[in-house]
Length: 475
Image (cartoon, rainbow, N blue to C red; front, side, top):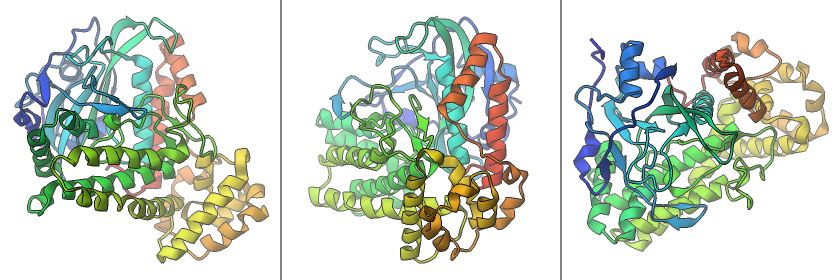
């Protein structure tokens, strides 16, 4: 049988109708070479029993899954790109291929594509994805999931045998098609599109869809759109805090790159911090630093304001303002929780948590370029001062600048200290995903078609995920 009994198709998106998405077909590719399949993610939706040939048929040639979307649907949306409104967006190189229920939770999940070819919303683009872009996204999602960030999961990567021309990397370059597994692909920009056309009825219809499929507990809310906005704000606050705790810079925080379920997705020019730097940017074209590391909370809040503005057609402004006012305290609380989780200790009273996190930020800042972001959390995991002081950065941690942090951390109880028995923590250095390593992994593929560094890196990230066991990780 091609799918397991756990496979439960539920193609809800087709119920929204033609004003929300367009039926499309995938390109026919010269080749379909399987480069990555996510066995763990596939098991959660009952697709782990597919053979490689069946996998390629569904995720390289896009033959419909049983009982699912046929044809796939390219969603319509608008959005602000670097705060400039663009009414000519939409799924230009992807579509929603299938929807199904997660085996254990019953959550509705989407399989969406990237690089599957032109759609009505491609404009002048070719609808394709470079193989390098696909490799980078697989690495990003693996690392972010390991660090407890709510993220889409790279489900499949297939090389497609075309030579693509790109202006920002050596060309011609190899091509691929990526499939991602995500809770939702309904974006802030989905609401913006219908606000642009002043269609309150369609905003209401989209609100009903989001509540029915992602927030059913809000079905009886008195003011459903405002209740939905509050839920989105809470999830966005958690997402933003998790980026900051992971030292992650998304790079392109446009309103079409934020979804209603609070998941990070669509990784282009992302970066992980080499060391603490609020001004660090990921995109070479972000000359003003609009989406720099330290400005990500501001960017997310600005995007939430645009979503709230779109809901202004169906919600009183006072309710929207009240909901937006909840972002700052929610983000503060989520940041404290995320940082305490990364340190591997049990939270104490809110003021004690805040004092520790503030001292931590001051200490990391004092470390400057001598101290990389990820090693700090590796060294101090579960509050183990002895391990930190005896490690390769021990001399730095004896510095008076770290004294306040050390003293405050000593008051916290380790959370699941048995995690330190994992061989991962006997290493001198932690798992990281800095740009030089990503480029080296790609160079091996580009120059020698050597996929072993890529496979080895994914295996190493998985070992780290199992050792960290951070809140928010996948199963």
